[in-house]
Image 1 (tube, rainbow, N blue to C red):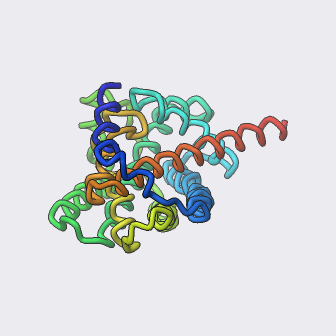
Image 2: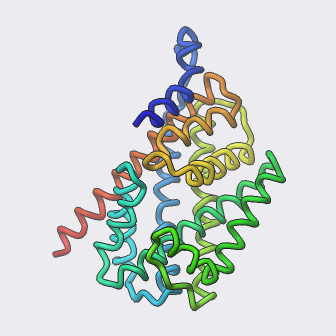
Length: 269
């Protein structure tokens, strides 16, 4: 909780420092609505990534099971501890826990890897960006050889993907997710009239995800991601507002899709 508060305080400090200028901020609500719709479209790729990763691990699920298990378990991201999303996914699927856990970890690596590669759209710190990419690529490629070391850290995982075709599909959908979701972030930037190009916004959005995931200190990266976004964007009034609006759009879409899936499942019974 302390880290969340510190992160948010760091992110909103420019807003507090220049509070007299907040009234000068103008919001284009059409762009904000477009941002919500675009992120909602991007979210359609997330269960597809999970669907193909699960298939590569030999987990037989249909598409609705993929959608339901992904979005319902995503609620766990907002619970401190980072493990509740994994617990939720395991509990919603009638498959061996170790296999589901292994596939979930691999799915998160795919998301981080595709985000890292996508961040190269804006060369910010090439040595750092390439280092992260090569490390993640090495883990994804040689996943099975890391399994014995994972057990030493108490991770009960012993499965690896046996169908590279499915993995390739998940990677492709990963890039599609980051492309569309970055356009969502760009719409927020346009709503604030920041004057930034798409490449810079796409980099900040994707790289901040990776950075907040590497530092698994707060639920859903709360505070950490906002601080990183504000810093990378220039740490001024509009960058601070952008970081807060980004979080609000993400949380709104999370609540919308989870509610929709739960209502649909209830009506379908």
